[in-house]
Amino acid sequence: MHHPKKTSTNVRKWGHGSNPLILKRSPRRKSELPDTPKPVATDSVLEQAAYDRLRSELMEKHPGKFVVFVGENMLGPFHDVPAALSAAYRKFGRRAIFLKELVPEKIVY
Image (cartoon, one colour):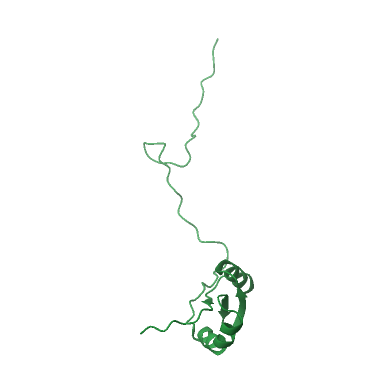
């Protein structure tokens, strides 16, 4: 019985060279999405000033808790850091925030 000759097919599509197990990566393509601006680290002057204005009142009412400032806006108080970060990122998105624990400052001699 005569069998027709099998034709070889090129199964190896990715690699080049003598070793078929070495696969070469294709060059990275730029994203099809428009460029989005990267978050810029802000200097915390506004946040520090807002915290300084409210510090004594916050220390009296909520000692040991955490507050978050973004610009002039304050969130809190919160019982722990994960709750404060979660609320801040939900409200303001992923950006630089100013997180403070409300504890009295220690005087060092």
